[in-house]
Length: 131
Image (cartoon, rainbow, N blue to C red):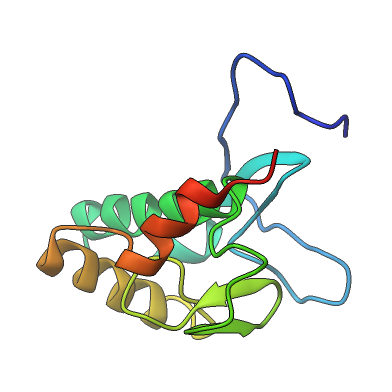
């Protein structure tokens, strides 16, 4: 995929099927500085209610858009972990969800309860974008 720098617009791609990356069984989404956010709804298809499914997909979308904007920042050394990419360990949507869908339901509940998707550190990372 071509490098996206200088683009006037971006896309978010949402798929009903699973997404696979090298050395993974599946991923909920993928994104990076050279690819638009891609989200799979497949692992959320059996959630209890349409409202819960919608909110969990919104959380996953926010997470991948965060990665598109390089959150957490590569230079950040606090409250981060390397686990299939760099992820925040604070209470925010940039945590790594391994237990599917349980972790994503928890991240969604936290987001709805706090009223904000990103922790203060991840918000700060948005303003440190590389040029």
